[in-house]
Length: 478
Image (cartoon, rainbow, N blue to C red; front, top):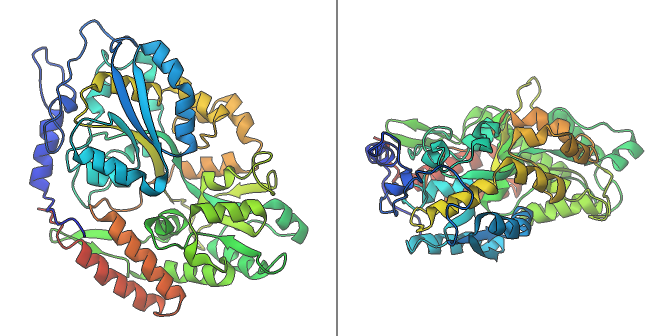
């Protein structure tokens, strides 16, 4: 059942004002969480008068919810050091992704204040922030009594951290408004390929979508039945649209929604969207896995590592995790290039995913929670995690430029160059709106039906537009 809540600009703006403008006696901005989120009600936070110290919340306990991920594993390794530094006790739960967000949503709905912190992506923030479940971190970042001088917020890649900033207005792009979370790592999208397979056949990695399609024709069953050219996602869920598809969609100049007469209007049947989707369907038919329609991140990455797929168009770190020695059959044979572009295009866009940490608006231990969040998004931890704990795409520029980190990346041919070429154009390419998961699941479903030839591409995208317009019909922008 979809949410029928009305989202109105006036309410959103008033909520933002309430969160960000609260003035205290000495003229400083009080942390927004002390004023309450969009729905109000969070406990107040007193800024310590004596200045910043890591032990300012000694004796407190914070509860953290983690999605089961290498990024969570890295944090968990360092919790004892954080506890020793701060005197804060940390308890945590680690949950597989298939039911992680259900647990988070239930916990936030309770308004009990637990967990104090949780892992999130940007898309989930579009539901949690308007409901008042998430604390605005901006005033914490701006308070020198709460944030260590060396934290250096400006060190984050701007578009990565901006992907977690939003003004609560459906249809407005990310990058403006409160800072709802901070990144612990991110994913851009690029093309991984098996250089052994390419070298044996005298092939070069593609620079354009047209070249990619030609390669798919050349690499059909390259090593017999069961092998295929290009691993991409196809399952009926939002992830199929989120990765390589949305990256390419934006590179064709297509958009998912526009605001017209105070309403969100789907644009998935624009000429650019139809042209792009035709190319994507051609790629699937020419080079996709035989069971493409069941493929998620996991199957796509595993097939590249096993030598079943010659290429992978997906999240940058998906192939990266297959390349360390012993990680897969083809470890050491994988290489990377930037996402192929439509013929004649030169500007690279990519859709962003960032695992981030957010604070519960109703947490009763906000200072302790902020110290945890600050520590595990700081420079020192981020460098350690990227070198030692498979945080493949660091959100901080200083880490990316660190010589030790560059040495790690040098073991994966082309990875650093592809990331460097792509990161400047990596942002959330979707339009923020409260029914994101429903619209993208419908999108994946229609894509399956187009590939199965129930519809032509144009017919399918027209059907999809009608479905998406109906889903967001309750979203009013005044």
